[in-house]
Image 1 (cartoon, rainbow, N blue to C red):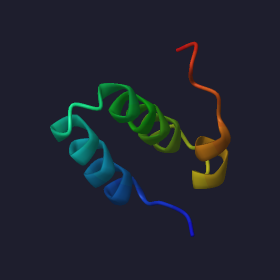
Image 2: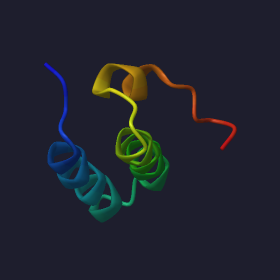
Image 3: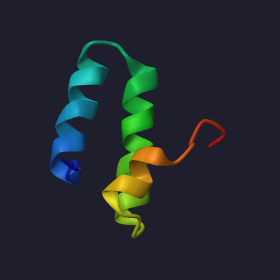
Length: 51
């Protein structure tokens, strides 16, 4: 199952509410990749640690 941007937004908000800012950042980066045209699968596999 692939995540939609809306699903990821909810997960990012939940992570931020739980003060898990590193996870929120990773999810934010996935959202940005998807908005830029990457598929959900490609965005999930992308290494964004250096961004």
